[in-house]
Length: 133
Image (cartoon, one colour):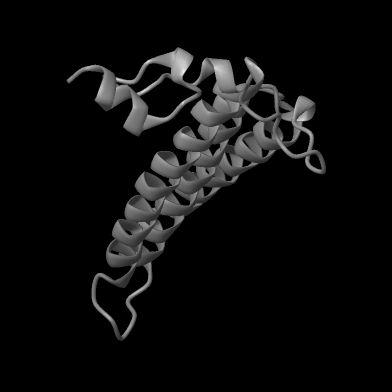
């Protein structure tokens, strides 16, 4: 097998991923571009494993499995961050995220009262349970 074609394909995929990370403003598209970069690395690892006989048999395939696990963890954490960003800012634009400003506090009226607590009793859970007896 000629290893030039998979290496060139992997280089193009990696370049496309880098372009996506640098140019996109949507956080979900940035995560997808990172996934394309990780798939390019997997292609290089598997191609190197099949073309070069090393002391460790199937070492490239084992490393590719580690990259797949890393990609799954990255997507899990990344999507959790993106969802929290959308809840706080109602936007997933990466360039609109303030890195120095703390998030705005949640108003007290927006917090739901526990079951059985009367809101007119100044938030006292004991007073709310006494009224129900």
